[in-house]
Image 1 (spheres, rainbow, N blue to C red):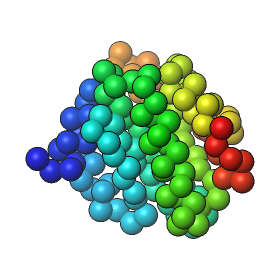
Image 2: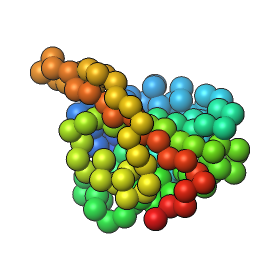
Image 3: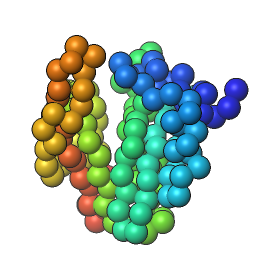
Length: 140
């Protein structure tokens, strides 16, 4: 099984509208994209100049609440900083309470909002919160 196929399987368990193998395969070979993965989860980031962006963080539901998400974020920050990034950004659905709590624990703060950013299966839209982490602030 390819890395992209394995990642697509995890993403399908983690999200209602998952990314497919082709999308993940294309991202994995994109400039500046880094993967941090463990058996039950992964994070994809993109580093450009002095900024990094979390593209996706996926953890299998059975492995949640055990610290894996926090470890993945922490390792992604270290790798991005090593490549010269000074801050990291991400978008998270406003209603994703668990993810927002994870990012708050790792030092991310709200920097903005994208109204109606996420499309839901029922046709509704949900705002995305833009979160940022300045690397000069140490991880808690």
